Image (cartoon, rainbow, N blue to C red; front, top):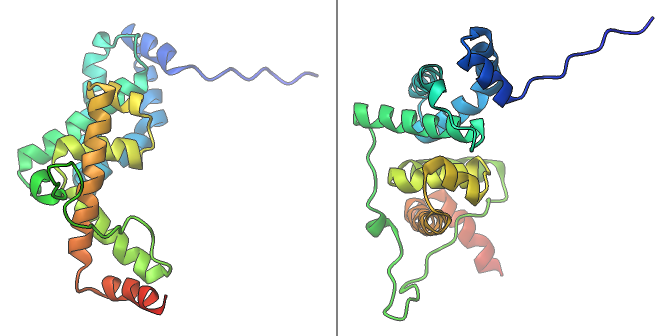
Length: 214
């Protein structure tokens, strides 16, 4: 006796089409399929579990209300990520809880020739012990949290969510060159902020020891 054929999972587009026809079970499946990714993205942007939960709920509520506006020229995930980024940033703005660093202050200084005027220690690599890695991760997370939102969004989507430059551009409605420019400036600013944060800490002394030995 042959086993019953297993139904192929429906694509996001199929589920969206069903939801647009008023089939609410399709919305439940979209939430089940994407809620973990949406929550993770919201958490990386807000750095707060409660706000991330609220942003996730806001995002899916917007999906439910505006599903009729979804254009099939882009992927559903691109649309969903755009809504999530906006929901997370709106949460942070409304609660006025985010202290952003000036990117000009956080970025390295340049000479007239376009070269970096002063060396910036590169703390982007991992320290070779678990305690050092944890401490460096804390400093890095705080530094990312202080990036201006336009740069933080690009950095989170490109570096932490590992999306392509083209995908980030689509989600944030930017050009590819703009994404590349903001990502470059965010990386430089983070290097400078990390170097300043670890000065005088055990991490700086930990890194100085191998250099002295060498």
